Image (tube, helix red, strand yellow):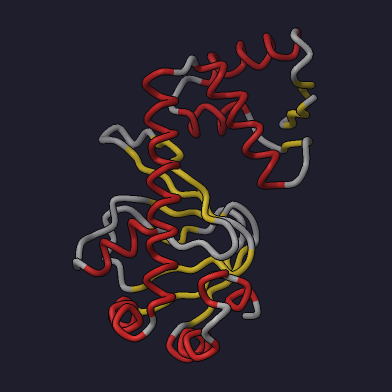
Length: 207
């Protein structure tokens, strides 16, 4: 669990890291495993120790939109708030790759806020970061064309994976961006003609 010590707000407090280790439990996830399900009761606050997790919201027709990624050192602030106020989750969190997550019981999160100022600094930083990411999603949906959103999404995926060679299907991209597969296929072919990407079977390479 050494990754806990690498979180900037935690470095000054060995006591808090030890507290997290004592009261939290580790859950290992394979790619595609669900960490948090929509409409489920929140009993824990997740902190990503290794890997990455995608956070979605769906509508009444079960269409999903990607809101943000949780990377190493991140927590889901929406789950944090839902847990504190005994609300059900409005989001779904799914492992993007093989990951490890520290599960902090909800009742312990409140105690940490009382005893450790650095925990409050950590939560406020994550809150600010998530707020900016959600604004990016709103701005993209409201003001950007789908081709812009698609290219930005691919660049973000490349940044997270550390590779320009992305293993992803047109169907998955359509689901992530809340559009039809035929739209994604058309835009990707256009991007290939413009020299922005190279298309293969279930693979997209950024140029």
